[in-house]
Image (cartoon, rainbow, N blue to C red; front, side, top):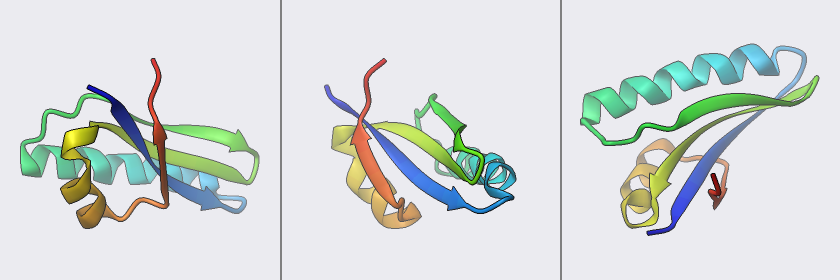
Length: 78
C-alpha cells in the first residue's frame, strides 16, 4: 500500500522551533487517537522554512487530513 507524507510548513526566523513543537502535537494526536503511525518528524529546508510531517497509509489519510489540516502532502518513499 502506498504511503503519504502529510506536511505542515512553517516560515520565518522561528520556523525550526515551530516545526519541532508541531511534531509534539502530532505525536499527541497519534497517541490520543490510538493510531498505528510510527513515522513523524521535522526538517529544516531553509533557514526560514521548516516542516513538520507524519506518514500515513493512503487508505487512512482522509480522516487524518480532515482532522489535522496539513498544508500539503506527497507520496512517501523510504
